Amino acid sequence: MIQGAMLLGGLVLLIVGGELLVRGAVRIATRLGLSPMLIGLTIVGLGTSTPELVTSIQAARIGAPGIALGNIIGSNMANTLLILGVAALLAPVLVPRGVLWRDGGVGAAAAMLLLAWGWTAGLNQLAGGMFVVLLGGYIVFAYLQEKRGFAHSAAYDKAAAAREADPGLVVPDPGGGNLLVALALFVGGLALVVGGGALLVEGAVQIAAALGVTQEVIGLTVVAIGTSLPELVTSAIAALRRQGEIALGNVLGSNIYNILFIGGVTGLVAPGPVPRSMVAFDLPLLVAVSLGIMVLAWTGKRLSRIEGGVLVLAYASYIAFTAGLVRL
Image (cartoon, rainbow, N blue to C red; front, side, top):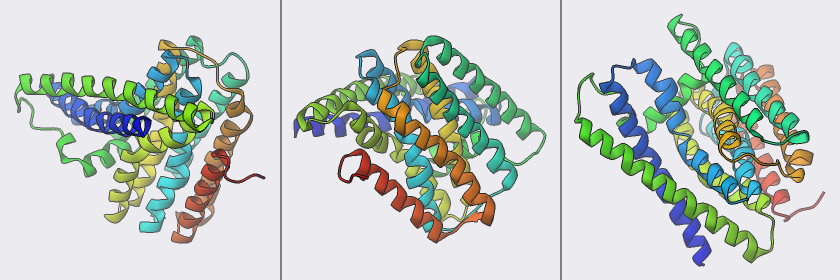
């Protein structure tokens, strides 16, 4: 009971703190004269991943790689199967093929890289540095694509989805707003995120011990689902507003940021091994799912409600198998 309250309380602090942190950062960046597009691709895009980032770093630093990596891998599984499936159930998602292969391909390649490092040296500082550099390259590429008027990138859609759900993330007028208020929002949000991450990880570790299950199971299920809730909300809102391409981009963008940003920074700050069970099963499955969703969307040029239902059922089956409720 206490462990569950710790986990839930940590999750609430993470979500609230993450929102405040990003709001403050957006206002500060605006006062510094950054363009709205650049703010969206960096401050909003990266900032909305802060809860997952802090959770994975906190877990890795206390020697809980199952929760750290489970949060990353499990969040991508939830994004691709659960969140995209729910979005398609709410409204069929039209799939621009160029966007699918460009951004979906980057996400699938990132998952393959994580699998390759997991088989060999683990998520060490070299891997983390490489992931961060690749993320920087992707953001520069996305920025140039937007400047040239090409189809919106997943990074752009991730920021757009967050702004659709939270008008407070919309870039204010240049020079508008009080800088002290912006700084207070940023610092206060950061404090809540750090405290919430510590509370969530401690609760997750204790729940794993109390239930007699591995930390990998808790990381892939409870922690990953919890930290993915904001993405579920933003994609659902986009789908209800018949903005299926933004819902899709939000999922693809989140998958890229989860591995390259969260995995990269985690590797730099708290390097460690990738649990063998994840290398043997969960990561290959994530690669297969990432490629499979591209094929599924490619064949019909959209994700129908029936296909959305299949994705949700597939995720439910994955969770049941991971939690030991079913056996092959």
